[in-house]
Amino acid sequence: MRLKTFAALLLIGAAGLAAGCENGKSTKSTSSDDWKDNQIVMTGSHGGTGTVVWDRTAGKPMVSKSEGMQDCPTCMKDASTYYSSGKMDPMCKDCGAKRMVVSPPGTHGKR
Image (cartoon, rainbow, N blue to C red):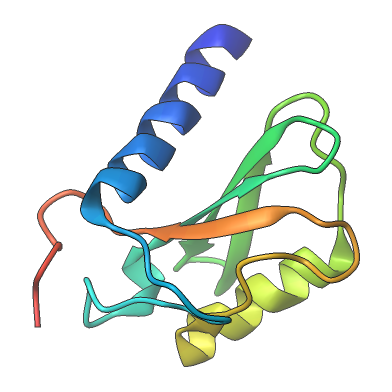
C-alpha cells in the first residue's frame, strides 16, 4: 500500500515537472482559476513526500504523507496562505521541504 501511495506521489510530481516549472522565489498557479483545485507536493529534507489538497468540506488544507515526512507547522501555514493567495515559497524556511504546485488533469492552460 505504501508503495502505491509513493508511486502515485511520484507520478503527480512528474506530471508537474512535465507541465513546466517557473523560476523565481514564488510558486504561483497559472493553470487553474481556482487555486483550491491544485495540489501541493512536498519532498522532505530527510526523505518522505506529502501531498496537500484543499478540503472544501472542512474549509482547510489536508495533508497525506509517506513515512519519513515530518509534520511542519510552517508548511501547513504556507499551504493555507497558498490556498488564499495563490503564492508560496518553493522551499520551507523551517524544515527545508521542497514544494511544487500541481494542477489536476484537465485544468492546464485553463483561464
